[in-house]
Length: 153
Figure 1 (cartoon, rainbow, N blue to C red):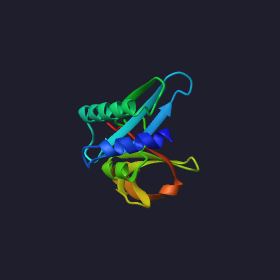
Figure 2 (cartoon, helix red, strand yellow):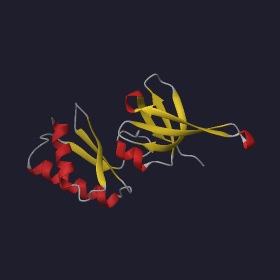
Figure 3 (tube, helix red, strand yellow):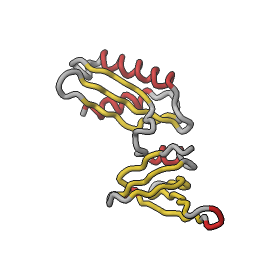
């Protein structure tokens, strides 16, 4: 119930249609609660946008006493250590290297080339030099356990 209340607060206070809520993580059953709000944007999100939401949501939580005990509120972008969880994130990351882990625990790495409401497609590179080939592999969302962005240099 708390997560849903905070989700509504965040969605009601987003200033730009380009920004969206990715997740809310509430931890700390003993002692002060930690409320982590993860935001993203179709063109990314900056620290100022996160700070605005933090101030607005924090003020409403205090005024309406949504959390009665001590808590710590953090608002940030998901970063590379958080998997992609929403279609908007997949679309935003087309062209980047990703690792798709299926529910069978198989790992597939490649470039994210397509995403729609049913599936994602990655292009995998095999071989080297003149023997290099590219194949596309499609994953339905119900096959995916998690998708991570990989940093390639």
